[in-house]
Image 1 (tube, rainbow, N blue to C red):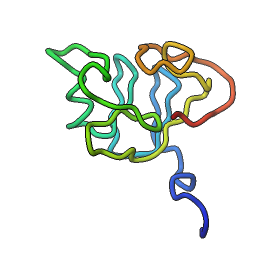
Image 2: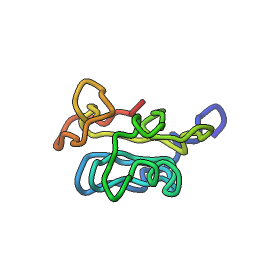
Image 3: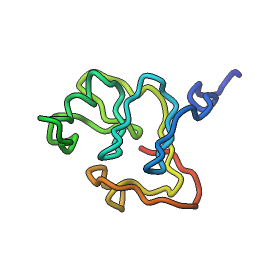
Image 4: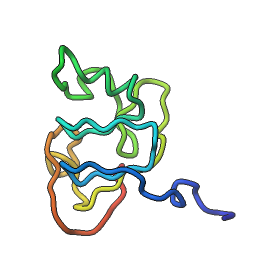
Length: 110
């Protein structure tokens, strides 16, 4: 449809059973331990796992954009939605590890 951002036309394809994150990118990787979402499985996701343990993404050189953690030069592959409208750790802090569950309105991350 002319004049619309393609990302708004994508259906929400994937979600996590352990948190309220939903995302549109098929190439994205969501960590079932820390519940952060990365633009790529072999880039950001692997970078945040050090010796089998999740590290805060910003501490391993990743940047946050539109709900995804990215390596240098990567672009967000889609949108991430959170049912609660609140990021992990509360107050929009992307370094937390647990997302609130339950109702509330759906809002875009980022």
